[in-house]
Image (cartoon, rainbow, N blue to C red; front, top):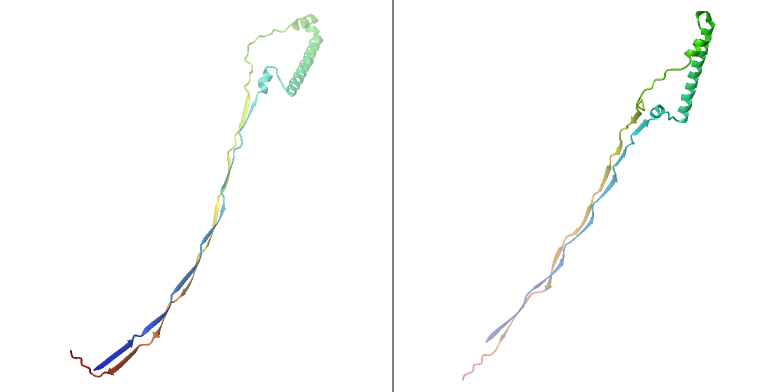
Length: 187
């Protein structure tokens, strides 16, 4: 009998695979701000109020030393001038003795003055009030914002992947046969 024997081996393929690579390097964006703060300056000068009561006090005979000096110097001058006027008037009257002017009549005229008594309010003049109101001074500087932008960058590096195929095992087919004598086995 004929025996056929078939031995076979399949081919095998090997693959070299290089994976793709993707690398990214990033530089972050940055914003630089240069800020100049706004300023506000407010200057409020105080109002000035002056109340001068010197004339009120002078009406009550209370004067400052300089006012006292001026007042009594003026009063002495006035009294001196009035005295000179009285002396000259009396001298002129005595010079006219023919008109009946006598020393007795002059003495009787100088005997006394009639004094009037009056009630008045003191002070007679109101105080002098002055004021100075100045407006509020406002100075301001506007703020400023300077902006500088540095853009971000993305750098990429891409390598394509590769697939290389190669034959790892060769295929083959081996056919053998064998003839064996026919043996019959009878039972």
